[in-house]
Length: 164
Image (cartoon, rainbow, N blue to C red; front, side, top):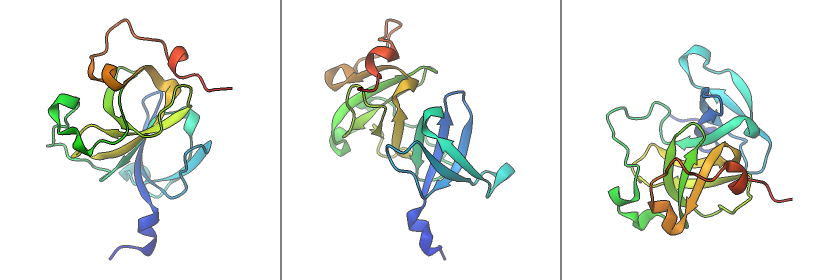
């Protein structure tokens, strides 16, 4: 039987800019906050509570299951899926570490420090992703989101600076 507080817990994977991963759950994440707590569900430190600072993250992945499904091959491109489930603007993110993620966003805006995306694959273990803009090398939206990244990408400074 599940705990009545389980519905208030979000299973997340915190991807740090340096490559570190923390897997667990949070009940106090909110967009715009500088930090939140994550309770580890990893074998090595299960139950350990961490303060996670948003500025240290590449992205926060809200997941269906912490262990994922190693047998599922996630679809990564718009042309691989029926896009009827996607709402908002089509978006392609090219992270500084080389990862490329495609999906849609209802709250992306130029200059926003962080925003949510829904991954392109509706069967993905990732339900939504909170992306920290300064971890990006390039952002493409609308029709440009369907193109492939090149070596001639726009710098993060030109697309991810917070509005003042």
